[in-house]
Figure 1: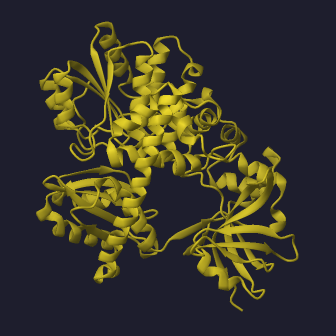
Figure 2: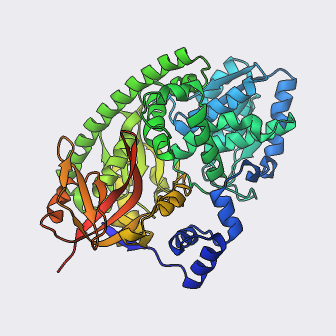
Figure 3: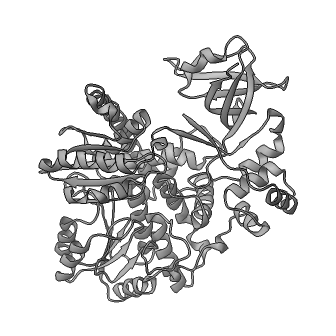
Length: 566
């Protein structure tokens, strides 16, 4: 692990902000690191308000989208709400369809089959629309590159409204409206919304037409917060506002489908982390193992008993997903360790019978193990399909773009992407991808980095600091939970391994005679030896609170520890 201490903000700026806000200089420095330098910016950060959401009509083509939907309703047209099979897509479809159905009946949903149709808008979906009399398709979380599909639909007198957040290509689809803040010609003030976030802006605009206020739309924010967490978009700007209020809905009055998913969770308050690790994998499991329609059925169900039945089925899909994920990861690791793959700058593996629904998770597992850009391929029809994952600060999408001649299609983000290619192009692509990454990745990016916000002493950890840090939530990209460094600590003699394979580490640490603080290191069981015999060591960690039997205590969640060299 690389330990990197973030640059300290200027002392003058820190003192000025600390005085303005009446907070410790440590808190002021943490805020400045997050781009918050004024009282007003701090107020917006600590007190997110729905009033600060942008006017949806600032988004390019929003007026056209609303006008076309209103015309469809006025003329009694059938509207098909189409979306991808992942969390962002299924939540977006659930949001827009349930909103439209609240005042218009001729609305249906369509999620493409991961295995039969693949990612994004499909010709099969358009044929379904034609066969069933749909003249308007609203595509969510996909479509920005579906030029041929939109043309095909237009020939059948089917209009498209595209609501996407992925990067556009050089040409936009010939749709009635293309809502995507990443369009070069779109001046919308915030371009990091997820697909469900774009869907929310659409219903916000439709709501304004119906004299609805933002208060009328709060009930949809549990879906938006779930998508924000699952899609790993920055928790800044509008996303921070939507995530905060969406979490409030999840914790107070979630829709029956989400309530059914979380009713066995033994936590008083769910965080964005819980959304990522509890809610999102279960919603995703439907599209991975069975069909994304199952997730939409769950998220749009209003009867709790029926929702609980759907949730029970999805729980089983998630169990099956875990089993497949473990099995394929073992097989993929065997491919790497049995040859010269370990010397490469990339990991690219392929087996034709790997389950397409879990290759993205396997790619993440391999990235955690070898820490380099990773692609996992499987057979899909007469082609190969793959999921890519990257390491911090390396843009895998750009690397794929440089290898596009070998690919049939691809799309995604800086850190995650999907693609298809002809089987005969696999080796050429694999070699081209390796060559491109080797030529462009700085060597230090191949070592995992712990980015440390500040070095502090245990004496700095106070109830006030913990209270203020809790107001930094919700955490996520560009507002991660602060990581601290404390040097020269000792275990008080209570160090022990945890877990059935002793994979975790439990400590009770002190510094310079301070009171001891409990610490937990997940996956750090092998570092136990470095904490024995009153040895001093340095630690990096998050400050957490541990709730047990109704009692709340401070706990350090360790990131890493290093023995102090004498």
